[in-house]
Picture (cartoon, helix red, strand yellow):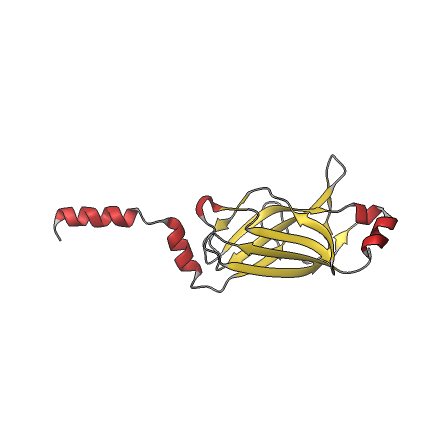
Amino acid sequence: MPRPLLILLVALTACEDPLESQCALAETVDARVLVGTGEDAFTAIDGPLDRQFGAQGGSHVWIALQTEGLAPGKGNAVAPPALEGGLHQGDVELGWMSAIWKPMRGTSESAEVAGLELRLDDTAWWDDTYAAEVGFDRDGPLTVSVNLVDACQNEAFAEIDVELNQ
């Protein structure tokens, strides 16, 4: 192969868009997301989630996600509108995912993001009138739901039933 052609070929190959290759790889794996917990790393949920109380009186739980078939994207970050989720009991919304950017580490085949804050509507836990008004049963089941759309427009949805430590 002539040297100028080889140099051109190497230069073109070196300029490949990393997002394109992530999207191509993501297409080979069925998109799915698992909901777990963790401030620093993904841990499967195997018991009640601990509420974290902040200095201003609010509370949250740490959510982590494990993905397959979703591209981490340029900058390896995930945030709304790519990430939507919340805590609910039937139609009653009791928490929402915060809009803080977090790194998504891994590849299109397997990646994770941890330290997502699921902020809670604390009024439902301490105000009986409000809880009755919105139809919240403190002893009833709770569900965390997550919808994640990657930079390639692949989408995955997951729900998991949870308990919260009061």
